[in-house]
Length: 106
Image 1 (cartoon, rainbow, N blue to C red):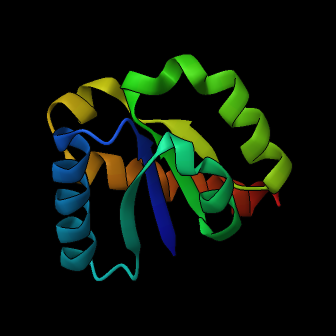
Image 2 (tube, rainbow, N blue to C red):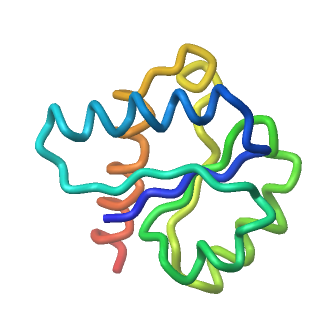
């Protein structure tokens, strides 16, 4: 499963990705978790299973969510508190819950 975090590519997102990867390994979850610039959205829609937006770019939510919906890729804005606390476990759970919701609805 490929989880993509879209952001303005700041240091905090890179740290969060590292914590999410560590948590996925701890839970034996087969996932590739990476961060990309929001400018890479079109390319990431082709290969991502789940996209999470950094809270700092939620102002682009309407445009990004529309494109993700058209591509059939589940998407959400990262919980602001979890992002601020760099809570990799909580953000990973948010991504997994999003994927499970898609499975139930699909």
